[in-house]
Image 1 (cartoon, rainbow, N blue to C red):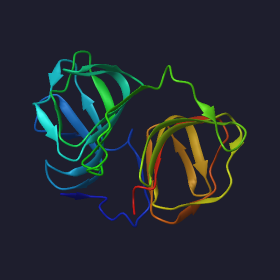
Image 2 (image 1 turned 45 degrees about the vertical axis):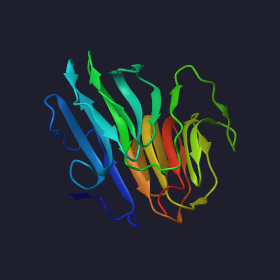
Image 3 (image 1 turned 180 degrees about the vertical axis):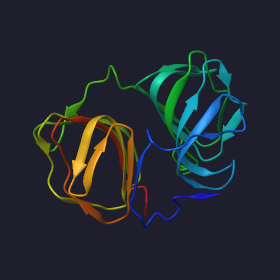
Length: 217
């Protein structure tokens, strides 16, 4: 299966308006953003667990990264409420479930095999740092090689300088409205911009975004 598999293309998806696809497990649905492969795929998705649903035990040969968007996600290692950021390294294994239901932004099979650190960050309680321009604050999530992942908060009226994305950029809008010269992107929008793409971003009402750069070479 190929979904948005040409990484030289710029892709914008409003996940609040796109379709859900059933997974092999009852009660677990996927909103597929990009995908290369069948069930064992390199994939980026929003995943929805109905209350009481449980996924089969499985391994992540090339890692798993997720951000809990709503509800509480759980496995045998703990409970992860909304705002939890987790990286499970290559070769990790777990049994995932949700008692009350949840939604996750998930990326699987996208790690460097040498990236073996397990990461857990409660983004709701961790302090953000001052960003590169006034009005911008940043919560770094992970760095490895050329890949950098962070949450970025923009107060109303914040403008950033035009810049190029070496290795591409991926954004998921969590709150508010993110904008650039190509359009406005409300909460729930996923944007993937290719290697050497350029834009001039800003936010008039303010926003919170997940952003990853340098991973699409």
